[in-house]
Image 1 (cartoon, rainbow, N blue to C red):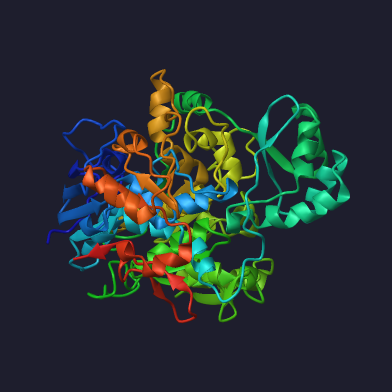
Image 2 (tube, rainbow, N blue to C red; image 1 turned 30 degrees about the vertical axis):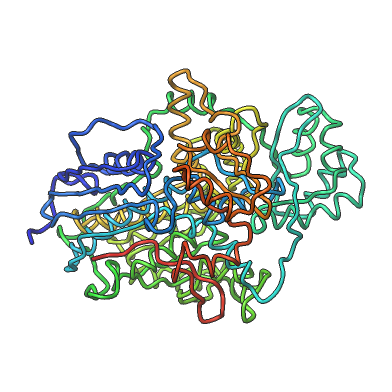
Length: 607
């Protein structure tokens, strides 16, 4: 094929064209991201209308730039599964069950989470195929699906459900946000039990309540619920918002009032950096010839499009480790930088064969190197590793990399071809931001409104929505950086963030807000229906018709049969994640790793 290198390339998809069709919930994400990466299309931008058509397939083709055409197919699911849209995919994959834990029953996300993730996965597949082509591979077609995106989103919760032991904290209804005496809904964040106790003590909370409340608060990322003592909510309601803010500031705890979507839409309108959820900046000096830039080895035909590339990951918790995990699934060799003694999260319960099931969901298959980044000798070791790597990926606190002499400029001196990737909370785009964690970003950006229908109090999901989507965007940014490097010969710095994930997820709602419309979905939207022995979820298109049927006295099987007789689409809601192993809607797709932990399928198939 012709060389994909071009001296005029500024963005990774410059000189390429694309055409896309299919469900707008997916294709709007795909088209937006391809445009932002430099590709052009003759099609107008799509809106955010819903489609109720069953098993619609979205197809996207990229052509030009000296590459062979690359094609991505995105589906809701296997047509035989009966999963036809966002609502049914959320129901079947366990998203409704996990999101609903705080409420005590399954609940649908009012935002199109599975479709958004699928769109990002499709773009990742296209970028990976082009990177593989540039390195001598032949992958041209990639397939992904919303069902696999949904399973990926719940993979940590699924792994915990299949572990050898029980959860470290109770799975029971409850959790933030809190409400002040003057009606302000707010999120609270701290990683330190001492500051947690000091904050609540300053507000007069009973000692027993602040003591017993810490564990469910600490583990809410893992359990998607936080059954606090009622006394903590009562304490919050006895103080005005300004008093709560002062107590938080005095004791090192952060609070953030839930902000509306209309406010975030206004902020977006005033931003000058466009709508990209990531940024790419080539190295200042061109130190390589155009074309493949420092490949670590030949692409293996059966090893994935990134086979032979090395990713050095210094990540913690979810966002960066998930991004590196996805790059590993695409064939890269991932080396994980861990502190002396290993990542403490390896021991986080519940465990499989002595290793945290949740940790395995994000880190299986990676090699580990222990490095104490506080020691100069170990920082030299890290620089030596970076000198032979293709990607360095981290999510350290803002400013830490520069403080350690490990920022992009520092590592470019030892490896000018490096793709340096930083996955952060805010990407320096918000003035005076709170701590950049999943729930605080949800609170600050209006996600609490977007995931709940109109008429309900806003509440950020306790499912780690933005950590997961942020990890997906981090991997997408790295792939874009690798393709840009292949086309220009420059090393590249890429930045992604939880803020970018929030804006990507809420994009349809933000567009409605910008048009002066109600950004929230109608009351009752995407709420599953109870049956005699469980729950079912109708498709979005058939929800109104299903509501006319009395299903309460019927089993789920009987209720589904009745609805199908009337030509209505619905599916059973998965309430126990461990049941997914035997669910015929996902036949053969969920396996066990070498430690016995549940493993969800690779989200892409390449040909």
